[in-house]
Image 1 (cartoon, rainbow, N blue to C red):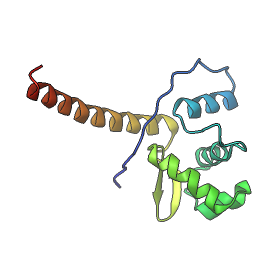
Image 2: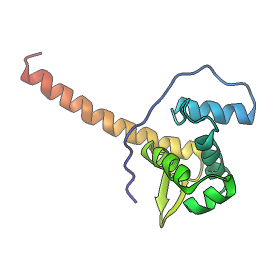
Image 3: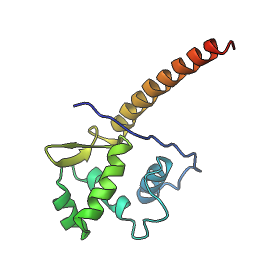
Length: 131
């Protein structure tokens, strides 16, 4: 499976209180997964369900469990997939790796690969304009 992320966001936030809920919220906010527009915290609830449930789930299963519309679930899953944290296989959604730490390591590799590509282009631009 090839994972293609569109956007990885890192936001430096103050370290959270030592509470599992606060730490999960901090983790999610640090990756820019949620916006102020998500008033009922749908994306956070979907993310929690995915990390707590070990097996991949369909959008219908997530919608049913969380009492959300399928359209809402798909909307938020699209963002989670674009960030590189969630993958889809056979129309079932799961965390990209077996746990959050492994998932972050894969995201870091994605970031470094993309960064190196941008760095190489910057080097070529500098060379072409004589810097």
